[in-house]
Length: 124
Image (tube, rainbow, N blue to C red; front, top):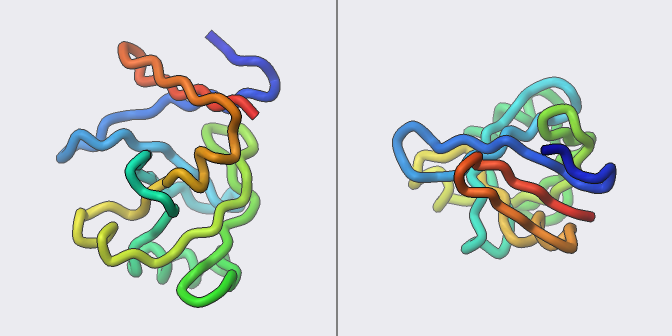
């Protein structure tokens, strides 16, 4: 089932160790970072190791103290909004590369998660 042109339809997967719902976010057509969809987190975040990897590739812009801007994002070939992330120790402690929080989800007007297919539909 495909969504309307303003929809972002994402086939998510479960993380192999935890019951995390993972979203593959491609940064500037260069690298894909699997991020945990975390509705319990107000802000999106990345681990220090992920920050270092993205910085080495020139894929981060400064956006304030401990905050960075990820631009030119796509999710499974679909354009996604730019994202401000913070470096989060909690992300690293959990063993994740990063999380998509409510700040990301708040850029959409409707969120639908179809459990049997693990398909996430975000409407702009």
